[in-house]
Length: 263
Image (cartoon, rainbow, N blue to C red; front, side, top):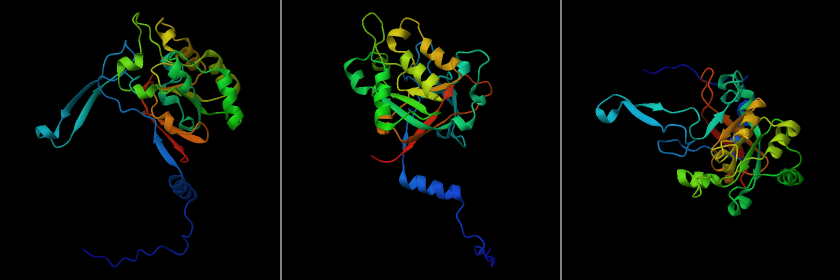
């Protein structure tokens, strides 16, 4: 059936909406780098957690009209978000973190070279001072990511844990002095890292998760098991961190990416 309806745009519609113009500019002038591992059964995870179970109650290969997966996972699975309630009873849950906190300036502290020679390395205040000497003060409300090169070990569980003969894990983590500076002086909103835990392996092997507890008790959130941090600049990028909205949720796989200019 044909129509003679005139779809000519009225002369009064002359300007592109500002946000559409901004979007076109961002897409045209930036690179989008995915900072997320695809999760799957058998991947590296906190040893006390069960492995993922995945089933297909509806499967087109069996003659069903569509494909549907059932995923059985803990919330802290793959690249994931930890909200305050993960460690602090009654604190903010996933559905209580506003979308205002999901698009942030991205600051990358790079200790990759030091980690290559010492897997137990952690960031220092000298690293922060060196970053600020190059780029200025860390912006308030930023997301600060720790670049260690550890995500190159994904998805090998043994390589990620890097345990010695005594069962002690040797992997990088944050330091108390840097976290105190970031949250109490710089006023950042969230942090992220490539390894499984906030705390370095020497601490977690002894059952010490004090740094993660500190972060979440500050009413801040974090992203664990980030990927591809070596593909983003240490300053000038934006990070977008999103996740589902389970009511009262204490953690969930996240989809995280950065927008930045090409090198």
